[in-house]
Image (cartoon, rainbow, N blue to C red; front, side):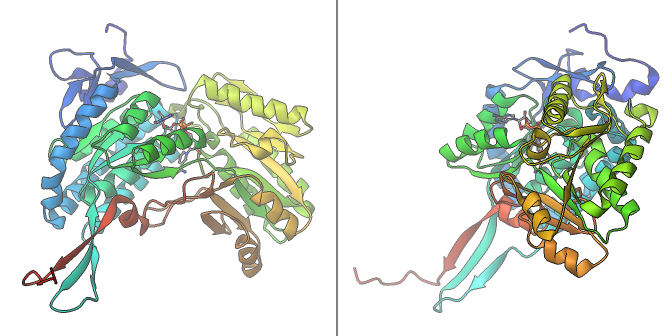
Length: 501
Ligand code: NAD
């Protein structure tokens, strides 16, 4: 592989053990506890803002999945048999290493994922939060003593599943991988992680580096960048007990079907079309800030992005005026230039966003700002007069588009918010908190934020949606024991009973 990598001094971090170790520099590698050549060739990782080649990594193929599943299954029992405190220490040490890697992590998130600097920093902090939370989880009580007839003792205990397969997306690559990897390991599982092939370093290899430096024994964590075929091989692999998937509803459906056929536990965290309801007593300046943040943060590429801004008709014009002013004022471009709005992940996504905007305008929506792009940078966009049936109202856009719809009363707001099959997050903004909460309780979502926009996540909070936003499972906080372990019931007696025959 002779392709020229970016190479000035500030790019020193772009090379890593995924392409420089061993006897074949430049060859793409994957992580199996060691950095080894991949069977599927090489992935060229490019920078969305510039199109430049950043680095080369190994492309896993289904045979790599098979080998990883076997190695992970072989390594897992010894890890599960360790004192919980020993596992907690490794996870806590990974947090310490990941903390010390802050500058490099943030730079990768900006360059590989197109994250603005603030988003990248918050993502790094959240990743540390997930690691700390997982380390603490390892030491929590994990079972019950059940009522039983003496002298029999009866214990229900949470035990690891074995090997957990993690499939993660590009948009918050570090956090959406770590939120599964860390608790799965802490609970005593081994992990096979497939990051999105567009973000294999921040979604996988940086995590491998942190855990390797923290002393995680080899074989317990495998990082296999690749496409759908690698994810599908994981769903069918006999040594992988569970799949936790974060991504689009379409791919999640395929993952759920295949994992179900192979009798695997499956957790699906999917898309959203999240409503922010702005009531007539809301502070209009705060409401506009919340709407803009929820709709445009990370270019709208967040499952919790505010996908519908539902505003009481009395505030509609004032809100739109503020959104348009913000849209025109926000700097857009290369994250390294300190912008607020970076690029979309790839050209296909730019085309998809633009098609939704154009089709909605053709159906009668008004385009008041944006609607244009420069390369992969899509301008913050404001669409008003958006009604049910228009693509911008119905579809998850995954682009920086503020979709504004006016409502007349609470019943109409609830009806508009609940339309469609997604049910991930909702926000309600109003001065009367009780009333806002009463309206919020009528929304069919897994997350509800009174006086906040829709993009909110914390390591200690159960995350997940209803309807097409998932399969009813939750991840993070108290949900992690449910997700990453299963029950084992054990009874013990001093002597075997003398049964009648
Ligand atoms: P995607 O579904 O195309 O890809 C996600 C991951 O799944 C990638 O690693 C991809 O390679 C893999 N994949 C794709 N098809 C697969 C298949 N058939 N079998 C196995 N693996 C497959 O998603 P995307 O477009 O890259 O990401 C954006 C989507 O993810 C949006 O819909 C967004 O709402 C959703 N998302 C959800 C959450 C959540 O927690 N609910 C968080 C972030 C993103």
